[in-house]
Length: 281
Image 1 (spheres, rainbow, N blue to C red):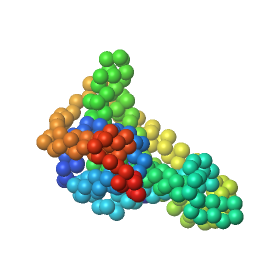
Image 2: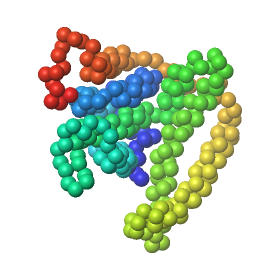
Image 3: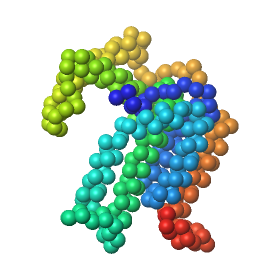
Image 4: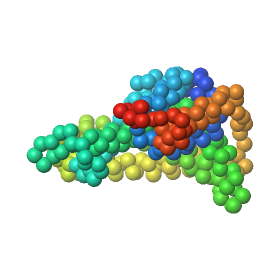
């Protein structure tokens, strides 16, 4: 559970850390939308180059970034297996067959696309939380959602709730580790047996975790109440948000990346023939 990186902040002095949180939030949202437009390995390769540049600029160890992918490995493997077993797409090019099992070219391509899409969707939000403090996230979300206040939506409270939720993810991860270690010291076995025995073995973990979550939530509520936190609407800020010189550059670079992805998807530049790259697109 310690590999869960979503919600954790990695302190560093970098261009990415110094970006305005509104810039990072907007780019992160657009990034997730962009991932759904990618259906080629070339597209994922281009995005990988952009992500690598972002990671290098953020001065975050690549190993720490890769650890964040461990939380989704099971989902990736499960999704790929389901695609292999229950494939209903193009079956015109079989490449391997044994007994009643047949693998097709497009089937394997689709599995690769799905795996890449899931992995890249985790990397985006992870980079956001690694380079943005909970306070900055709250201020950024509050600023972006401010127009909704015109229709009486409690924007300030929503921003606080989302920020606390993100911050609780690593907290619950640490608490789960402590409970698992405590149960293992009492000879609890979570790794042997079939799936039903393993699920039953998780009960001694889930109940203390639920109790701990409620206790921590109550402690946080009491702490906020003792500091007279009544309405987030009138909360003051030590630092006001302002865009820096690298914010417009980041927007431009991301827009160029998004344009390239859309071009690969829809080929709206007829004077450039993408068929020459058919073996990789």
